[in-house]
Image 1 (cartoon, rainbow, N blue to C red):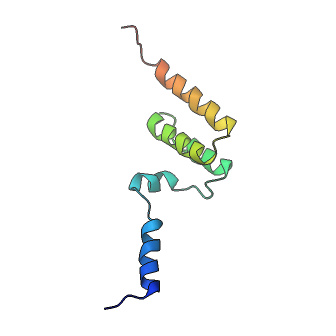
Image 2 (image 1 turned 90 degrees about the vertical axis):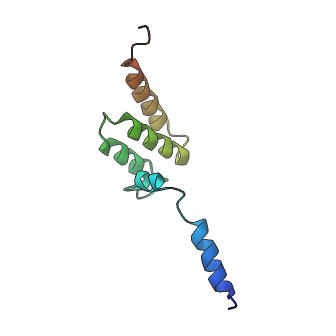
Length: 91
């Protein structure tokens, strides 16, 4: 059976636009516009403060789209510092 160009192009486009993993889909859930600071900020604030790992991954994901956002960098570093301070390294 001979394939037409449209079938082949459809297969190629389906493979190109697939998400690489499920974690990315869950992180992107609720983000209306990935280039909007407000969308990321609302998602970060909606995540409970005691879930540092999830919040940090949201910050990192947001910074991959908005690397020049001072507010994202500042708050990521502030939360990271707060998280690390709870561990006593001099024991």
